[in-house]
Image 1 (cartoon, rainbow, N blue to C red):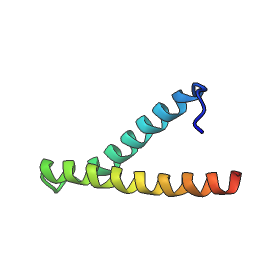
Image 2 (cartoon, one colour):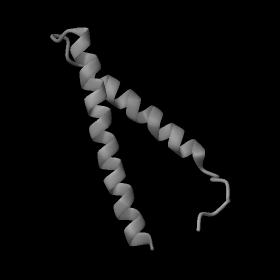
Image 3 (cartoon, rainbow, N blue to C red):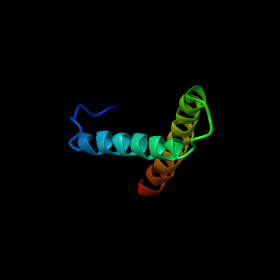
Image 4 (cartoon, rainbow, N blue to C red):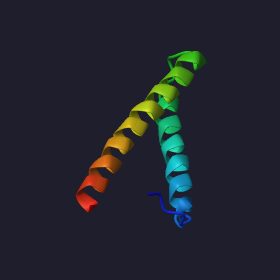
Length: 66
């Protein structure tokens, strides 16, 4: 049964999202030879890989915590 409690640490979610976006943008901006369209594609792909990794990490943490 879901709890009706309001999450208290939502700032961590937003801070980690902003940090991930800055990290990915920094990595993509290091490549000066590709076209801007390729940079947009790389940002999307890197954010997708990062999301899958963090989802797997979160799942593992929740499995070990319970």
